[in-house]
Length: 242
Length: 242
DNA sequence: CCCGTTAATAGTCAGTTCGACTATAAAGAG
DNA sequence: CTCTTTATAGTCGAACTGACTATTAACGGG
Image (cartoon, rainbow over all chains, first blue to last red):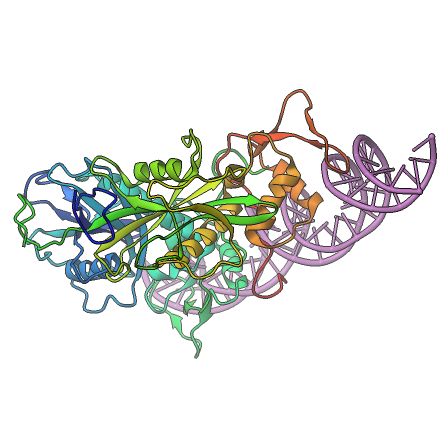
């Protein structure tokens, strides 16, 4: 029973609060996750999501952004999309002590090589598929992150967060295909994206991306819209559409 | 600097963790929220969301469900829809101490009269519109709850959580209209709801709800589907559809 | 006991969107 | 050159949408 002024009716236990990150990117057409290898028990040698304690003067969001900068080595993470997923608070999720974790998903365009985190553990990009079990309940956190991102692609302009400042519609389509694990019809995808005002806008000057095989693609950048109307729905799961 | 085995690389401050609830229901065609009046500073006399500390052996979800039972006086809250919204962790959100709050939205069918919470504060249903400023950052939490519920009505069968076990399509439509604050065309609403397999199913025996004015309505109950395909989109905001 | 009101349910129809598909254009590779 | 690859344009029928009209079945008041 702690006697705090104004809080005298309830007992409460102090909790450690951490911010954990599911940092996602698309590399070579496959979804990758930034993971750190644990150096100590519990789960020593296993991969875990990067994260750390929320400092006394920080919000969970601030802590998450700080961790993101530390783990990726990026100098400017202020423009990156950071999304709070949910909070994991099961009493036994960390065998050492009571830890409540606020989980975030972060989306990066092209993958910079991570640097070792400040806890000296190595950080690496690993493909989302073909991951072994992660430490703690991080499997579930990562699965939740994947599901959330996949769902948000449908009705928000989130996909552009995976892309560099200027990108082609082909690259944008690959974001959808990679996260959803489904192939999309190219002309139809194009039609829908361009039909949604403010989703993407043509880079002025008629810049094209050349160098690849095939006809050069026009370059676009993210527009001002944040929500997509109408939404870009995933190919129908569970049963046929009709 | 706290020396906890395995956690020796970081300083961390212990936080108090609470679970706060935005309990929503529809009463007399208007959205209502369950609020408690604060008896002490800070924000004495102002309305606040019900909530309380997470106990040492509880998850935030468990604590939220316990609080829900305490505040509403309902004997069985196990079937009620409880949804984690997000976590609010700004350092100054409670002037007394560092409190991290995991917020939940709960949906109730018909409104039982609340009983006074265990902290002796009175709990009341108040209309969502015409609310004065709430204590702490509860205005924002409540707004987030409203937005989340409104969005989930589109692509999930969440609306049935506002309805009693057996309901008419008119009642279901009123849920949508009340939460969205928009009127819907009755025949079209009916067509879409019935076209989505597993959303609602007819109560066997051809039961009708009589007693009101007009033709008796058929009774339905919630089906097994949780997601709605195709989604039931809100009337278009920002600009005309074409 | 009939008639007006109310609400549920059925049906219509034109415009739009969607998915599947074909066609053309513009680059690099050999 | 010509084959391959990718971008972009266009077509077409099916499905869906929103707006609307019509019918049915209850109640309430004169």
